[in-house]
Amino acid sequence: MSYYITTAIDYTNGSPHIGHAYEKVLADVLNRYRKQKGEASYFLTGVDQHGQKVQQTAEKEGVNPNTYVKRVTKGFTSAWEKLGLDYDGWAETINPLHKTCVQQILQKLYDEGAIYKKQYKGFYSIRQEQFLTDKERDENGEFGPEWGQVEERDEENYYFRLSDHVDWLRDFVNTNEGFVIPSFRRADVLNAIERAEGNDLCISRPKERLRWGIELPFDTEFVTFVWFDALINYISFAGYNKAEGSDLPDFDQLWPANLHIIGKDILVPSHSIYWPCMLRAMGFSDTEMPTLLVHGWWNIKSGEGSEKMSKSLGNVVDPVNLVEQFGQDAVRYYLVRDIHTGRDSDYDIERLVMLFNTELANNLGNLCNRALNMTKRYCGGTITASSFDDPSSKELRDSLSYTLAKYSEHMDQHAPSHALEAIISFITSANVYAEQHKPWEIAKDESKTEEVNAVLNHMVEVVAIASVLLKPFIPEACARIQTQLKAEHLSQLTLDQVQWGLIPVGHEVAKPKPVFPRIQLENPE
Image (cartoon, rainbow, N blue to C red; front, side, top):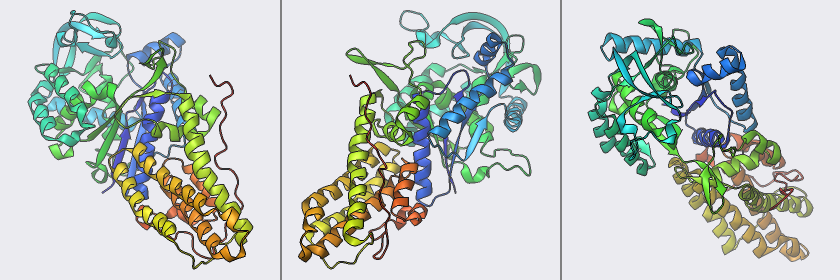
């Protein structure tokens, strides 16, 4: 069975920002890790291209919505290429295969009586593209700013019988702790379930005000609600109901071992209320429900505190600009190092520079340069046999098993920031070991040749191991390290093959070149 990792597809009424980038890099790191474990893992991401906001923006620009979304989509794919994402599947909701899958599901639910038509008068959120009830009002009886512009509408639409599944959903969330990660987010879901009590979901929009969407197969005067369309990408591009001869994956191999990585802003109601109820109505069992990994936001420092990044405030960080300024390695490393999964974090360019310079340039980069330079200088560039051994050498070797255990534990818990801490601690230990033995000094004493060889061997070995463990995070940098080690075979190792002795006696290494050149801020504050 494969491991299936998806991210929320990005709405093509904007451009990539650091929040999008973090989510994608997190998924990419976890996907690469699963493959590193020898598992068959599949990473799907993509773009959500329908909806009223897209139609309105295209009209303002005087272009066809199809032309508009294709242009915006290129911005996302270009950004993900610069960040080195290695996704296995790409979802675009204007793809005909997705449209077919959505319409098949709509027709099935309609035929089974799960979708019905009625007249409704109420308030509608332009921003969220959904009807609101009094339960969405705040303590002052007002609709909060999160809903944006709200207007009253009176129209006929089709509704999904969401209320039929609310009792089940409450029980499911209460009895399945693994449905939402981290667990403290379950309270948000349970509160949202109470607000959903007795309400059905409007899943259509009349064509007279919205034409840019997927037509209802049973009434072509309507298109489907953008969320009822977008959420289905998780299964449509995973091979659900795929046509014979399709090159899509085998759905039974991907589902239900799946992980949806989403931001906390779309946990409720879309992913934790609408989506599981939709799946249940389609016939999915409790054991086939996805796991929702909910990440926090990148905030921006403001005065004494911090505030959410927002286009309206003009404080959104462009990940493409970051990569162009600091490089892919620095940005990928920062995004998963300085935020703990599920929590918010403050974006801080000085932290990005500090972490790169301290943990990569000074720590791993310094170890790599010293190990290879001295191996060239004192050992002719060859890993040389040595009979020398001492307690500090044994301690360094023994620490590998602990490092591997902590690395695997944290990665399995979707906590890459903690996994990185374990790797950096291991590298730091090797640098401390080097300072204890000072091979650059004892090399002057011919009687210490065996010790020099042993110490350099240990240093080179730690560099090799680090290049394997860090590969999910900074793949391009690790490839450069392995090239300098002349050990491209390391790129093919699975995690269970990582052990002491990756670089054998007699192996020749190359002359080092700086893999992590230090970053200097041009105008530090």
